[in-house]
Length: 172
Length: 157
Image (tube, rainbow over all chains, first blue to last red; front, side, top):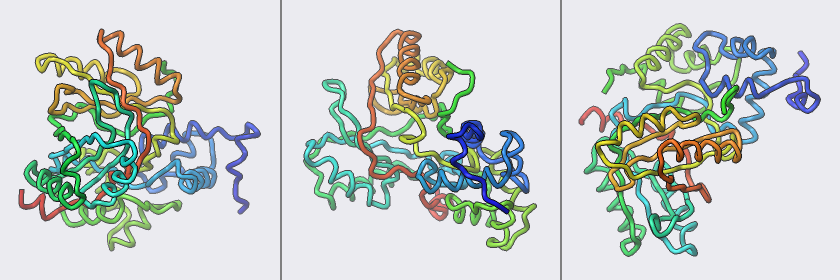
């Protein structure tokens, strides 16, 4: 079998956008999910697999598998911890926090003074608020961040939680 | 917690990432988990139906996938649900949380590109009649919610 070329799009032969839009909604749960997607977007199963392999390799797809809704499992204490760190230190602290097992997300964001002075965000997920706060105290102590201004914003309610929808057909 | 049996848990533990990229991925997963393909498909359908999973499939890198922005809003508590509903109706919103702060609504708006994103944000600001706190990401250090599920802790709580 000859492998399809994922580069064919540059010649207008294959439109991978339709496949991406379908993938954002998840795989159909049938024995041949790629075949089902292929039929919906006018590709062969092998072409679909080649595109997905390429997107994984290029990093457009970060991971592929079961996307868990933590809240439904009982992981309901979700703290967004925000820090006001010197611009010269934020990247290094961000990398250290990212390596902490309790930290589930960590990124730098632009400050928006005066309303919002914080430039580093990290998430700590857990079953109970006390455990999350204890994990944070432990991190602050070990990483010597006691003097850095921070706030903890626990989530109160999830109004929406779903995967990104970047490909929008017929939408403003 | 939704009642999950051992096979459900093993599925989640083994396949939050690295779903096999082959013609019959659920058969490959079943083989590793010592189950049948039909069982795996049925479990995944059930987990999805019970909203334990939001989907089975790819997680796109949002920086490469398109444009997105974290935004926050301070609204009176009594109006929070109504404003959240308006935000949810906007195209491209994929996360929307109430949090404990004066800025009590936090959401992520996504779009195909920056132009579309800006148009959506402006349309929402106009509808709500107040500006959004816009907090673009500068650099990601760890962006992956596929962390191990602490089953023991869930059991105990």
